[in-house]
Image (cartoon, rainbow, N blue to C red; front, side):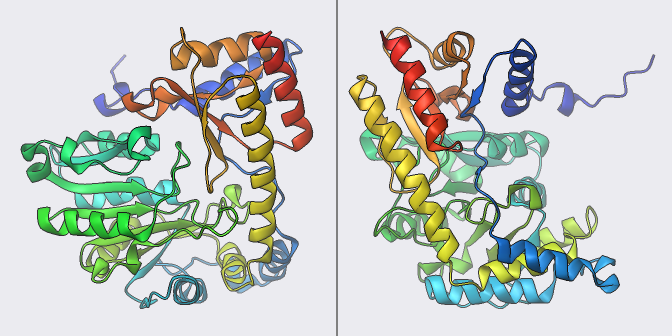
Length: 388
């Protein structure tokens, strides 16, 4: 039989979270009570006012037609309004905002839209695996931008060689960070914009967790940096802040040339998201964000509970100011993958080994705070048994 599978797909490793799902199912079939702290999907319900809009708009036959390729105008205007109110950033909804079918799609398609085979892309390490996979699909060269605890997980541009800086065409950043949960002030973005401008690199910031923050901390936007739109774009999603992961709705904003390039590519691949979903998302962005603050308070409470319990057991975690994650040091004597396997095999707890996020993740594992406090109490109980 002919070999119909491309070399790109053949050389693509299995998506880690698909593999974890397979292991979870196999254990559940054996009767194991598996607690999944692996994938970063909020467990809280979508706020009622959002799905009320979805139901209302889904009843209109006109909304079952194709969306405009770049997205529904009401949704794009809601994104622009959100940026004005929340960040003080002015956006032209016609040229500087593009609707996405979730930011995972947008990130991979952005890479296709801006790099050629062999081009270099700077990837945060540890960082969201989709950045590296998107570069692989486009035939690019992914170069790690080291992040470490000693430097509070902010970019260390000096760690790049002169040739890496000169070859780079695209740089990804992600704050609040997945997986490290690190947060930054605007000065980090000012430095990033300056670095990108000096080296003629497109800066793409993934702000997936921008609204899940604790206490008085407010996550900045890269577009707050003066002249950032000359060199930068920013991705946003409603998946995390509004518990809408399955709705697949997000956006990208910023440099109009890059927005147009991505829009051109996407118009040949998809026809944007279902109109009622875009209209419901517009309502979310135009809301008072009370539900977002309530959700953040829930995640903070979960974080504090687990962080304190881990500390009592002698396990070290990075204490975050936002996100739905804890980034934890692996106990002595274990690799990241080895300890994650031990937790799954002996305790029925799924965590994500740090190496899933790049070589720099070795020595750590990520916990997703995506289960109730009652389930976290069970996690703590099981971990204490392991420690004992």
